[in-house]
Amino acid sequence: MQSINGFFTNAQQQITSLYGFQDALLYQPNEPDTARTIVQTPDIFHMPYETIIIETPDNEKLHGFLIKQLNRTNERETLIFFHGNAGNIGHR
Image (cartoon, rainbow, N blue to C red; front, top):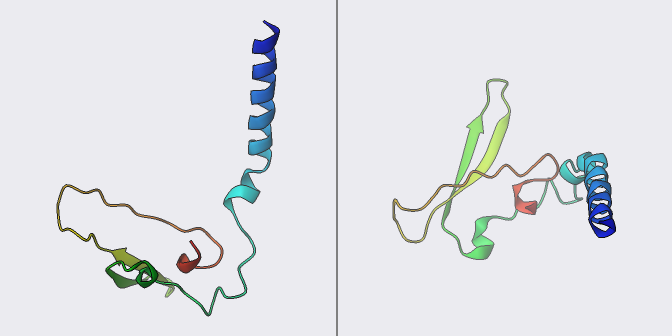
């Protein structure tokens, strides 16, 4: 019985720690020094891609990559990846 209580106490402490530090884990407020100058592209992994620019109603520009599959099939899923709030997509 004591080992079960110890397990749940440990699990509760870990969950409490994760909850307390969730902002630090998810939101990185500091950009790397090269965030505005070096943007890596899927070229470094030899992946076929298109550059996509979407202009928003408030005149901001969202830059993205459409990475295409090597073998063209409709049986594969599509993944949309939002890289977060610091740096740029090349840092992910």
